[in-house]
Image (cartoon, rainbow, N blue to C red; front, side, top):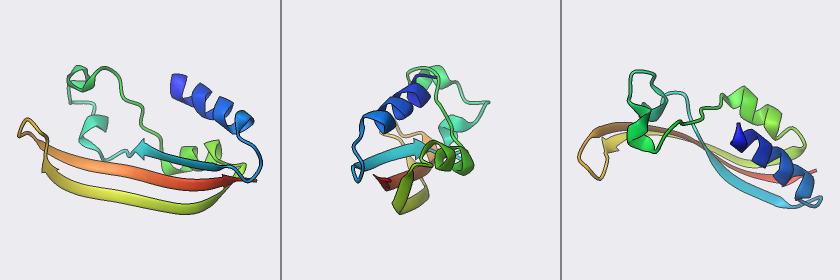
Length: 92
């Protein structure tokens, strides 16, 4: 999992009190559905549970955590359900 490696490397590299801002795909997003052909979305997608995200950011103080869920259309007109976790956190 390249993202997990990247997050761990970022955590090590970021100085104390440094700020992390990131977004993670939620489990209820259309792209997280096993029946969706993920190749339509540039290959595999990584879905992290809230508990897994919190574990990865365990050495950070969460300053803001916004969970977004909304329905709409993609630019190609297909129905899509978006589920995102957007986070701002400060390294301890």
